[in-house]
Image (cartoon, rainbow, N blue to C red; front, top):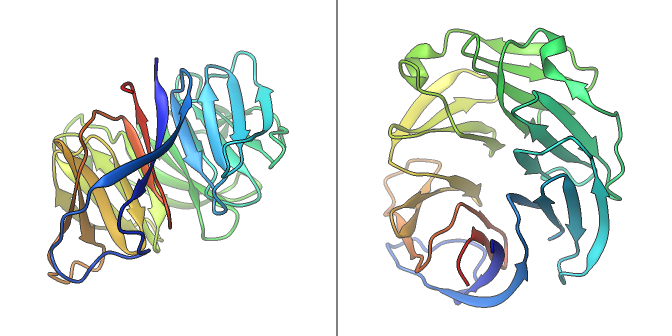
Length: 259
């Protein structure tokens, strides 16, 4: 049984301290189910993926809406924009956009038909109504506008991601695009898709919140400033295994297979 654990930091400050500190989590609630992914909206709305079923829960954990996309099996879900949810099926190279009632907006969008060889990762961009796509076939970053037109392309990313190594997660935050490369680290690009640097780490997943890059490091989460100003990192011990996490102003959410 896989569960989405919702835990609240004992220290409820919305920002991390200026000195090196270590925090612990206190469990406050959980949602039971066989979920493969989740996303948290700006107002605490929770979106959950169960096979082809997409659930929308309020911040009080009440079920608001649900929908089934039949043959569509989302690999990732993102509801960082208040007016829509982005779903991506990596196996079929297809995306869907849902509104806040979980109603399909544009229908199925096949990214291969847009001359993208191997769509591997997709995430929202806040540079207008756009999205980022990592094309593993051509090793390039593409940004599409609301008309599905290519407005930005960064070519030849083989040297960034390593020979044959593909990123496993990508997200935009704080005017930066972050991509996790297993065994290497987290590559950082600016909003124009220009490579900036790579933060070495062995993380399996990561998040970005309130000016901090947070990544899983064995049995803890390490938070380092995205300004890379030399301030000490913050450490968050996690006493259970998890595959995804998300920080918000009051809660931290974990997708875990343990009670």
